[in-house]
Image 1 (cartoon, rainbow, N blue to C red):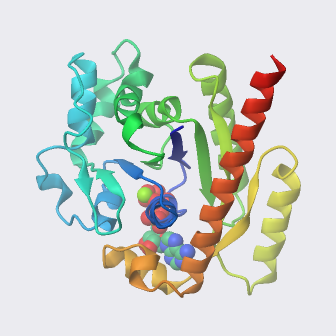
Image 2 (cartoon, helix red, strand yellow; image 1 turned 90 degrees about the horizontal axis):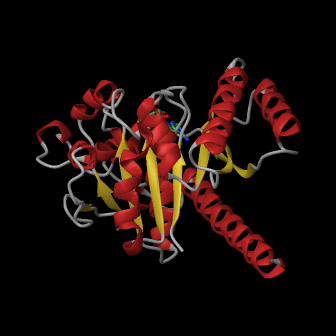
Length: 274
Ligand code: ATP
Ligand code: MG
């Protein structure tokens, strides 16, 4: 069964793209077939996976949305790029920003990306969608196409209100459009272990949410290696597998795989009970 995970937080710069690159590479290292979809007009994921001029690309996720809007058939292999990390990529470019407005007057405007995701599902074990920092119609498309949402967050004051807003959007999407949407988990990123207040903030987060939604045990440390690997168009594994961020993303990958196996078991139990 294919698992589709949207990596989302409307707050900017919290590690969504870095998590997509490194969870994707981690899953490939475990033998899974992975597609990463860049769903941000900034195209940072496309660049981080080695394509330095996304705005010159002939075929991007914008072409896919245009086809979905025009009700043209989607060829699942068209436009998908292979990368040195072994992760496949549907790239993005600045063109995607046009769709924030273009989709507003469409029927089923939240379901355009889902049509593409359904078409490519048979080829992959995991599909990761790197979202833009907003809660607009593109974000709704990602949440509608996904089975779960993984929320990277930085240990900061004021990030709580943003998290509440995202969780309430997820619950609206679940009620109205995509009843099977789950929370994959909240991931603490760019963790600086030294200041005591950071530890305090993370422990508050775990106390506030840990009972109701998963907060990953793994915390991603803050490290300059991450920025270096992004600039070099590689995952942290490709850049230097023994660094602390690589070890943390390896652990996150295991947690995601275990969590998914547990969810599958619950699903099976529910079906057997019926
Ligand atoms: P946006 O909201 O703009 O899409 P984002 O949530 O995708 O941002 P990233 O682009 O992954 O966030 O990260 C923001 C910046 O922080 C980048 O420069 C990245 O290299 C850096 N960064 C990400 N993770 C870490 C880390 N663990 N340690 C140090 N720097 C990091
Ligand atoms: Mg990003």
